[in-house]
Length: 310
Image 1 (cartoon, rainbow, N blue to C red):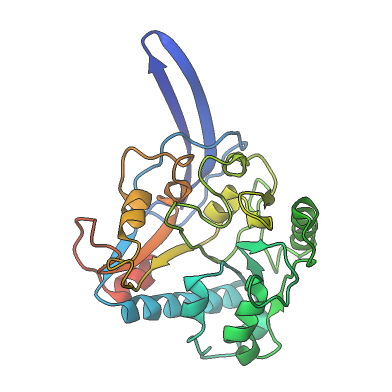
Image 2: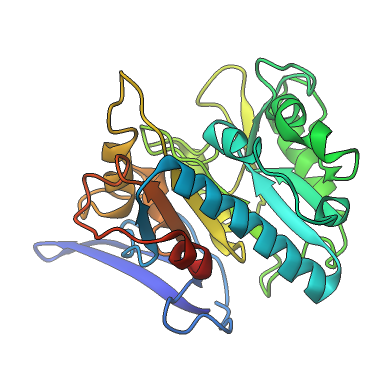
C-alpha cells in the first residue's frame, strides 16, 4: 500500500475558497505492499472522494456472507502468524447477522481483541441497544470466553465514554493493536456498516464528528439520543483491511441498499460531508450481492476475487 496527499482546491472566479489537505493512507490496488506515511494529519475532511477501486458484486447474499467469513478467518490467521494476535473492529446491524453464522475453523478467537466501530452509550448488557450484548448473544458466547472484548463503561455520558474507550485502546500493546507512523491504531480488519443516509460508524452527514481527523481515535457522537461513540474516520481508513458489505433485501427495500451503495461508491457529486461513506471509497473492499449492486454498471465478481482483494 502506498500513501498519498489528497488536496482539494475549489476556485470560484478569481476567489480561492481554500485547500483542505486530507493526509491519510491510500490503498492502491496495483501495488499494495508498503506504506509511505504522510507527515501530518490535517483537518477538516476532504471535499472530494477518490474513486473506489475494490468493488465486488456477487450473485447472492450467501456469497457475500461466505466472502466475509473467509476474509475474517484469513485476516485472523495472517495477523496471528505475523505477531501472535488479531485486532478486529466490528459495528452492529447486518454485520452481526453475518458473523452470527461464522464458525471459527481454528482457535483464533483466543488470540483476538475485539473493539467496536461504534456503540451506543448504554449499559453493555442492554440487548436492545448495546452492540456488545447483541454480539455476545449472536456469536461471542458461542465462540467461548476467549475473545478480549474492549467494553464501554455503560454510562450515558458520550464524552466520558469516548475518552475512556480511547484510553482503553491506547493501553493495548502494539503487539495487540499496532500503530502506524502517525500514532493511529491499525486494526487488522475493520468491518464497517453503511446506513441509507451514508453514515459509517456513528459518523453522520453534516456533523462535526466527520471532520475529526487530527489525532483522536474515538469521537463522541451526538446525532442521536442516547449518544454514542465511534472510531474516527482516519482509524477506519487506516485498518490493514476495511470491508464494507451489503446483502439481502426486503419488501420495503426490494434492492436492499442499492441507492446508498451507489452514492457511497460511484456518485461523483457527493462529498464525505454529504455522504460519509464516500470517504472510505479508496480504502475499503466493497462487497455486495446483486440487488445491492444493481445501480452500478459492474460485472459480477466471485467470492474468490473478493477475498483476494481484502
